[in-house]
Structures are given as structure tokens and as C-alpha cells.
Length: 556
Image 1 (cartoon, rainbow, N blue to C red):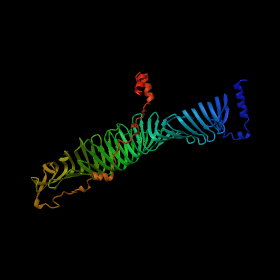
Image 2: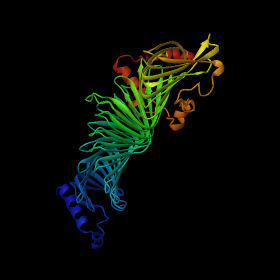
Image 3: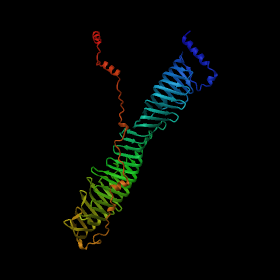
């Protein structure tokens, strides 16, 4: 009789002789459906060739198996495949251990865990069928229709369609590459949530970083960063909570928002902010602050609300500021209710009771515009109720007023002043810059004044000026001031004023970034590997046999 037929018949008799009680418990008992050959061994049965086993709703296939019937477990060898009958889950590996009591499969080497469009690759996977949770360690890779994720360790909660990745996590899709150490990925909506440091680089080279985690919808291409920064070639946006919609090129930030226009070297801060990247249009409000960076200096300005427009398609490129305007620079300071900064000609327009200070001068009007050239104050134009006050070397207040004024500056100080319409001037006549002789008061439609260190050096007047000189002995409070005189130096803002409004912390451009950590792992070869390499290269030293006579002499 054929031994294979005999063994197969014995296997069938053994299988069909199981008691009814065993059949009633088959839901928890590991069963044998078929095998080409069955052999007994000490403590277990060997199943050889086309093995098929069953446990609950799972079919188990392999080339061979060791079945520990008493312990209700099996060791599976070669082309292992575990297929769930009801759920779309299939697992393959080179080797596995399956425990029918705990319902845990331990799969090793070339493991592939597939759930519909999501596939997990690893060499070490524990799959608990009771909880439907698969745990991998020592590196794994998850692939779906959109993303590829790798990490050192991971937990796949199948019922929740959720995978938790731990340590050296990398998410790659056609548009972005993300690195972090703690990521939760939901396979159905294809969203990722990270905790702690998270770094992303787009295919265009944009950098998206978060110190305190992020949320990323990989299909909608929407991001939410916590303590996050998004940086492109043209801009840098930062906030404690930062939302970014890639399709709309739209940013929205909350708490400590800052937007840097790299081309203009203008940075805007505030409590809340919105930024449309394509339009280069930003809206920032709540204790807003502007820093305009020059090569040698920086202009600071505060406001309640800031609007910046810098689109290439618009002829007007500007910055608007509303309410509580205060600005300061090394050579000037100013206040106003509202302001317009024109990027094209570096002009700053102030409205509603603006006042500007420059070294020893103070100017005010209903509205004014001043121009910055080569990072220095170049000229200022004042309209309606224009009033200029300059302090000379003796701290006297020289005063000028008129319908319109134009002031010209050199090295940060006013050098010339042109008054056009209803001009009035009051200036102190000095002797050798040390002694006041009296006050000159002149009325003229047009006045041209030249200054040196705050003192009038030269004065030209229009047709038929009306002048009066008051000697020093007759100078009093009324004579020494023009109508409308108001020295408002106490309102002059400085850096302390700016810092009290908002003092931004500088961005740490050298902060930890996971993309700066090399991916290459260098492993030192063993001595055996070195020797084998040398032998292949014919570089290994040749060991000569020792001369027995020499050995004898040495021994004696």
C-alpha cells in the first residue's frame, strides 16, 4: 500500500473522530483543513505540503506547519498566508506563529499586511485578531493610494482605520515629504496628526515646520501647525496656530502671528492674521507691529490693524495702518491715526493729527507724506495747518507755519523748509550761537528757510513781507510763540514704546530640523567580513607554516 495514501487515510480518520464537544468549540480551536502529508513528532504534528488550517473566520495557508494540538497553536513555515473570510484582510510572511487561544499571529520576515487599499510591509508583526490590532517593530512601511509612511514602530488599529507611527516617521506623497517622531494616520480620510517636532518639505522646496505638532489632510492639502512656520522663497509666515490651504494659497494664524515679505524686507506682527500668497495680500490685527528692515537701520511701527498689498498684478503696492499709529527709526519718530506706506517710492503718508519728530525738529499738519531715500529721511510734504518747530543750540523754539510746507533733510536733519501760502515764521536771532538777541517774526505768502543745527541760517521771503523784531528784553510768553504752537515731545515714541506694545521674539533659524539628520546608517564590518574582503582582493597576509625545528628550539 502507498505510504502516502496510508498516512492520508490515517489523517482523515483522526480528523473525523473528533468528538461532538470539540466541534461545538471549533470557534476557538485551531483546525486542520488539509495537507499533503501528516507526520507525528514528539509533542506536535508535522503538516507538509499545501497546508490549510482554519481558525474562526480566518483561513491559514503555508508550505508546512508544526501543529501543537494540545496547546492550540501552530508554527507556520514558507509562503504563510492568513486570510480573513469576512473582512478584507490578508497577511503574508515567510514564517509565523499562530495561537488559537490568544488569537495572536506573530509573523516574521517579508510580512505583508493588506486591508483593502492599505498595505503594511515589515519583518516583525504581531496581529491580534481578537482586537483587530497589528503591531510592528524594527521598521515598517505603509502604502495606500496617496501616501507612503515609514517608521521604526507602529500600531494599526484596523477597526478604527487608524495607524500610529513611532520613531523616525517619514510620510511621502507626490507633493510633500514629512518627518516626525509621532504620527497618527487615518486611512479612510487620509489625514495625519503629529505630536511634537514636525518638518515638511514640498516638491517646490517650501518648508513647513511645527514645534508642537500638526494636522495634515493629505487629500485636501490642508495643514494646521502648532507653533508653526511656513517658508517659501518669497515669504515666511509664523503663528502659534497656523492654518494653510495649499489649493487656495491661503494662510490664517492665531496668536503671535508674523508675516515676512522677503523681497520688501517688511515683517508684520499681530494677534491674528490672514495671508493670500498669490495676491501677496495680508491682513493682521490685534496689537499689530511692522518692522521694515533697512541695511543699516530698522523702521518700527505699531497699529491696531495692518493691510499689506504687494501683488505683481497691481500697480499700487502699499501698506495700510489704522489707529494708534506710532513709528520710530534712528533719525525720526511719528504718531498718527492712520498711515499709508507706498512700497514703490518709499513714501509714508500720515493722516488725522500726525506729528513727526526728527532730531531737534517737530512737524505737524492735517496730513503729511515723507520720503525715505537710501535708508535716510529725504524730504517731507505737509498740507493744511502745517506747523514746524525746531530747537536751536540755546533750546529756543524756532517756529514756522503755513498752508503747505516742504522740508528737505540731509544726514537726518532738516536743512531747508519751503512755506507756500499764509506763511509765518518766528525765529530767534543769535549772536555766535551763544547769545539771544531777540525774535524775528515775519508774515509772507511764501518763505524759504535754511537751517544749520536747528538754527535759521538764511531766510528768503516773497513779495512785501511783513516783519517785526522784538529785542530780548521784551520777549515774553505771548511774543515767543505763534498761534497753534504745541511742543509735544512727551508723545514722541521710542523703542521702549514699541516694545511695550509688542516685543516679538526672534525666530531661531537654527532650530532642530529632522531633515538635517542624515538617513544613512553606517555599520562597521566584522573581522570576518574584513578578512573575506581582503581574500577576494588578494590582499590578505599569507600565513606560512612554522618550522618544527624552530619550534623545538624555542621550547627547549
